[in-house]
Image (cartoon, rainbow, N blue to C red; front, top):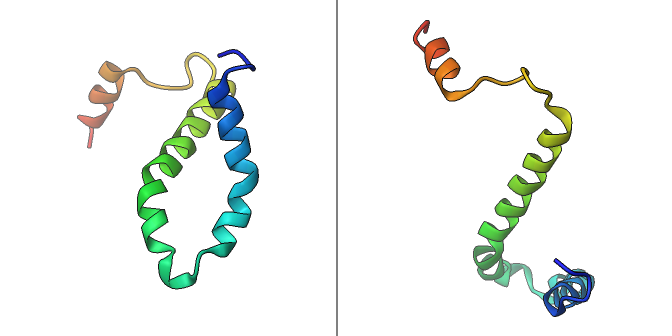
Length: 75
């Protein structure tokens, strides 16, 4: 994506305002925004983990599906 993409700008603006907005929500009302944002939170967490693993895992460090299935047959 291009850095001039308006969606990128909106997300950056939201991210800078988010701590202030969260601070304004009472403890009793935190559940509703969390329910709305939970899947996004976990998706971002998983995307970061995938990106980290791409940098850390070398060829041969992991098993393909066939190798993993064969390995499981030993248990």
